[in-house]
Image 1 (cartoon, rainbow, N blue to C red):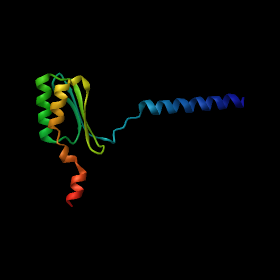
Image 2 (cartoon, rainbow, N blue to C red):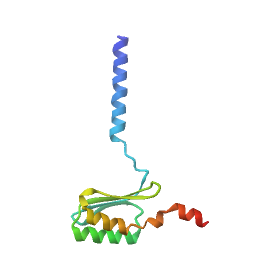
Image 3 (cartoon, rainbow, N blue to C red):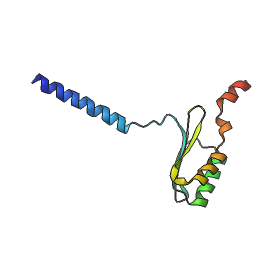
Image 4 (tube, one colour):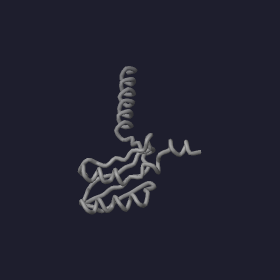
Length: 111
């Protein structure tokens, strides 16, 4: 009887651990996120630099892209574009991204 109860508790703990690992999302690292479908911005979150947002919309519209563009708060800040956008468009979006706006090492040296 006691052994069965311990097995049940162990099984429940394992299932809980698997659930936490599968359904946990790391959202604290994202500065902003934009979702494009067929060249149109369908969803966005976070604070997106206005000029970068306009350039991204133009690039996505030109290529009729379906992709996700995300900036993550790592050191240094990195821009991730889903691979289905194509190398040419990813390169254009990377070039348009204002990295210096998020560069904290230069801001710390200036003060």
